[in-house]
Image 1 (tube, helix red, strand yellow):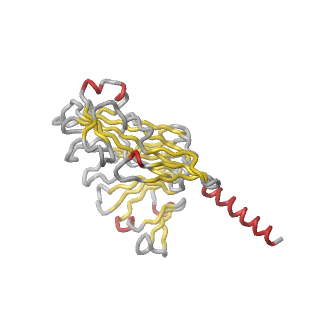
Image 2: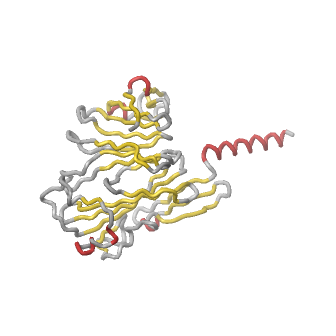
Image 3: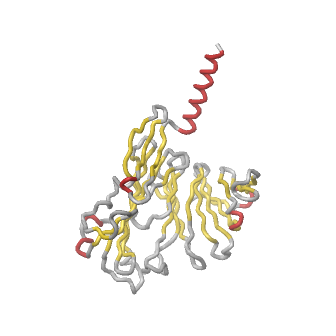
Length: 311
């Protein structure tokens, strides 16, 4: 009877583990110099077997473009192709964000495409139930960024592609996804020239993946400091962080809680942000001395934050 009871206890523990973490998980084997050897795997943790795997760039629409490749082909994290204006009118470059015909494009930048540069990255949700694989392609003139395209492939832990998001009006940089896979955020803003003097519009965007709609777009102008906008997910919350342009010693934080449709805003001193452990549904949790301190303190959303509805 005791053995049977222990069996029931173990079965119950296993059931609750699967509820919390899922039967399936995502693993990633990184290779520093060859994206073709970077492997994304989707694992059935009950059967202890890989149900699907592919390389980081296997489904990139840009990795094997039919143009001459330049640069080091042995040790590479990206590829660069030689192109011309005649190439640029082809199907490979449809629906790009074209900077060269926009008002902010610097006058000193040439308006003839010369090279195409592509690479891919990976973002796995904190609970390893979703993965985003962004594939990027940047077109350059002699001196400047000419045009841009990105496509995000989003997979669940079974290896099923359930959403594809493409850049149409904005570039896509830092990306995060909530643990439930319902919401995604990405920063935007890239420098147009080699010196980083002139930039595109900068800010971030929140996307409702489940309903395929843009929830919020926030422009952030960096007038008094360098661009340091970052995006992070904390469970089913998403936060954006960037330097306060009126007080460089502070970080502005925007945190989005989709369950109650609230946006929480507060500017923390950078010394405080460096102690951040996590963000919960109730507020920001800090270590008292540093982020590894077991003694914690919380700054609650309903105490000091500005609260707005997401729109």
